[in-house]
Image 1 (cartoon, rainbow, N blue to C red):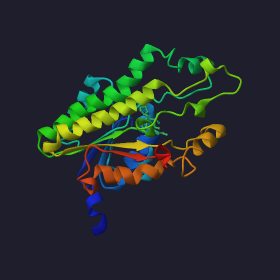
Image 2: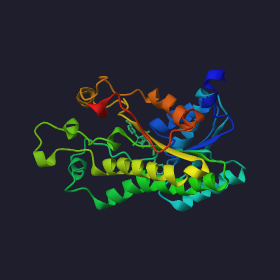
Image 3: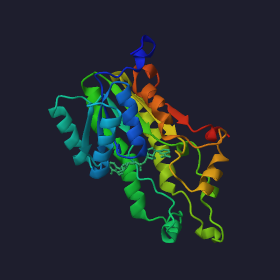
Image 4: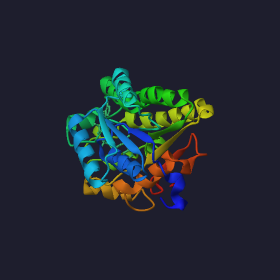
Length: 279
Ligand SMILES: NC(=O)c1ccc[n+]([C@@H]2O[C@H](COP(=O)([O-])OP(=O)(O)OC[C@H]3O[C@@H](n4cnc5c(N)ncnc54)[C@H](O)[C@@H]3O)[C@@H](O)[C@H]2O)c1
């Protein structure tokens, strides 16, 4: 690696990514592989996990990819994976808390009405928080504790969202000829989880600071992924740069945040949203 980029070098480090089989999990993995780390890709969805690993192995041309089925909402599942990694005499140096259930605003009218605060099902609240927020806490508890315990330190990176710092603009989801009290909305869970992750980030940043464990958050803006044209146009008009992100545009931030290039950054939320949140 060029001397200039030495601080980005993650050779010899192992990074565990939760929700690694999804759209951005793959990108985080590719970024970390590019920086020289070994990657433990984890996800609850076994099939997507092996497809993602296969793609990484062929596109990144790297053998530094391991996979584990892991449900972040289940402590026993996380501990099981931690034991398997330990048995291979590996150490998780970097934890990327990325898993989430993204409550899509779908075409299904029943679901649309249920997305509204007045009707939002308690079970969905519990399920989404269990993955997006409790999951990050449980993974930090298991892997962060281990980083602090052996004195070698490490990095925890929580993947939040621009909606960690702004409220959803519900006009994005509006439908014609639908009564006001039936208009679809981005569910309350998303905002609560993402704001909660920033609280977790700050808490961890001070909690393990003396043990060399840094904790930061990355808050991406919306990623272009085949969304309906009308939605895209509305969203673009809220973004000073006039466009959504490409899925690979967070890679260099991941490399910065997970490496010594950001050695003095701790407890911060890096918002990468094309300027949307500063309007
Ligand atoms: N895509 C975007 O536009 C965007 C924008 C801002 C923030 N984000 C955030 O980035 C992260 C990744 O988003 P994405 O677009 O790749 O989402 P995605 O839905 O493609 O991937 C999420 C992954 O989490 C996994 N998952 C769900 N429940 C799980 C559980 N219990 N245990 C382990 N894994 C579980 C899913 O199987 C899926 O593979 C999320 O935290 C999301 O909120 C995404």
